[in-house]
Each structure stands twice: as structure tokens, then as C-alpha cells.
Image (cartoon, rainbow, N blue to C red):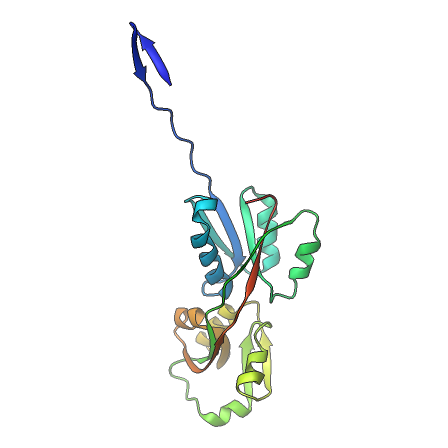
Length: 201
């Protein structure tokens, strides 16, 4: 803005607008592959989203969606391996804004460091896992197993750390977060992801 005072012009700085705060919602707790992908998305989209972006973790993708719909500038990241994603595509109050690829961290079979593992245990496994990666056991260990299903690979690791189960099918980030060790490593899973929101990013 230009101000005139006694025929002298002075320049007054206009206050810069506050940067917008964007929120990316996805599945928690800390250590999920979804959190890993969300951080990748945020780092790759800094120019588009602005410098102020918050990551929020929730127990279910459905809860993420409700938060996305309840507030402006909120988005939800969902992997295409999630069986319930089909419902999000059908909702008239959601828009599919972007699809991108981000491979997961390494997956493997994890135990507590003090667990007395021996090879014969692989023939009679009871494993806590998210539903999506359970076929890794059949493909890499070639054994049938009993599964206790939970809402995330990070929750699986947490339950093994807490002594509720002995074996978790989980990813490298969750393994490290909860202080477990891998007795078998399988693969990083090639994965694509959808970003949902109420409007265009």
C-alpha cells in the first residue's frame, strides 16, 4: 500500500496472508505403511499443499474419512489393498483427487528379542496381522498359519511387544518402533494409493 504524506510517498508493507494448514488423515498407530506413504505424499506435494501440512492417524480409514468430510482442507490417504476402499469411490460426498505409487517398507515375520524362537515353530504358527498381507506367509514360508486379524500392521507389532502374541506379520518401520526383530523378511510390497477429499487439492 502507498501512503501520501506532505507530498512524500511511503510504502507500507501489507501483512502476508497466513499459510493454509492442510491435514492428511490415514491409518495409525505410528509405524503403519499408510503413515509411511502419507509422509512420502506430503514430502512430494509440499509445493502444492503449502509448507504447513499436518499428518493425523486414526484407528480406521472410515474415521479418517469422517474427519476429512467434517473440516476444510482435510484429505484421506487409503491403500488400494484395503478391501473397504470400494465404498469410498461410491460416496457422493467424496472426490478421488489423486492416485500415486509408493511401495511399502519391508514386510517380515517379527518376534520379541527375548523370544526363544526355533525353526519347528514355523509349522504351527499363530500370527497377528492386518488382513491385507497374510498371503505373504503362504508365498514365502509355504506353511498354513492361524491368524488373529487386527486393523493395522503397527497394531500387530504392538501386540507382540506387549506379549499378547508371539509372531507379528508387520513392516520394518513398525518392527523398529516397537523393538521387535525379524526372523524372516519377505518383500517390500508394490502399492498404489488414493487421496480422497471434498475438493481439489
